Length: 440
Image 1: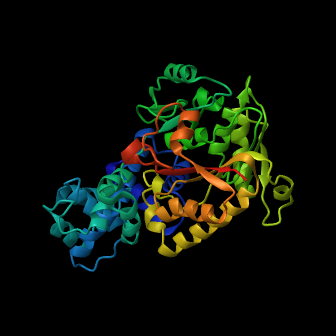
Image 2: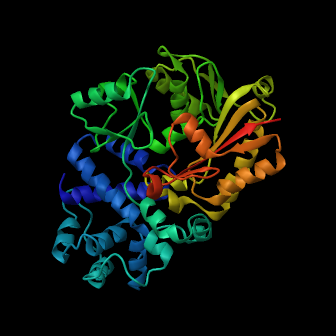
Image 3: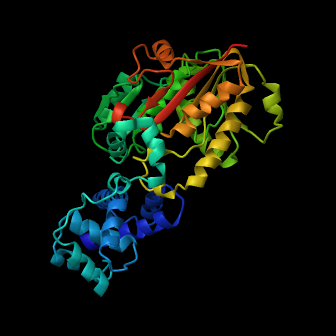
């Protein structure tokens, strides 16, 4: 593909990303599946530019608005601004990219040409930018972030806007970390051990893992190190009754199954629950590949679900990885931050409160309820736990230092009553975890 054709591909993908609700990587994958002519180098170049634009959206929009040209802020205007402000492309270079020839974007309009002239010689970052613009986050979240991070706000937000590494969890039902690492090396894929998770590897350079023997045979799963840590903190053991209450696509279910492994099989009972049959259907091939065929998938039908009543006060561990704003995963999908609206936070918080109360009925005396989110917002994390404990005196919070020592065997990076992980502090996605034990 020519540079112009690659740029046209970026424009087309961006239009789909900004007009829908799907994750960016899924939109890009669907785009390339229909265009097999795009080689691996083309895909890498297109995706690099795609994510660059998404990570700079707020600042690019600020410059387009500042031009005073009343130009619609769309994919083309953002790309033109990025080429000038960040790539330092010349007028001739931009004209050749927007030539309208072959598969290149159509030629610049008069107003787009004026924009390129107006922005010439300027830089992407500017001292006049408001903090939310310069740091690329929705301004309505400022108070929440400030309450959590204080004077570390800038450091934390900047880290959330960087590229995330690719982490792998080794499936201990089928392999060991050393064996999986060696298997990947045989296919010229270099990895290093993750600094926190004892069952994790991190790719040194990005490659596609889906076609590797290690992946096809279920030796590995792509999973952020922070997510691996959450599963380990559940402290599940062979013989236990365990519930992954909001199993979703099954990433943590697979990790829990591996922790319950004994001689290559699951010893005990693990339920993967969800309210969506389609998500359960997508999980089942992953369970088969991982050798976790003993996991029982359960569709939850509502408040009066008979299964909930049958298993009341009988479960050793209940993991509740609740639906949330996903602010801790912005590195994976930078566009997700701009889809969020203030009223959605209220909806998520209401769902989280209900899920906590409902799932708590499953926990037996001495059992544990593990509340987790991939959010960085106080209202979805500490506030939810404090409210739950206020009205449910049968539970107590276990300090995360104690749980970490029990499961991982060293001091947690951030100490305290609960666990907070973030790209800036731990190099992982942003996660929150509280471990609650039923005491009466």
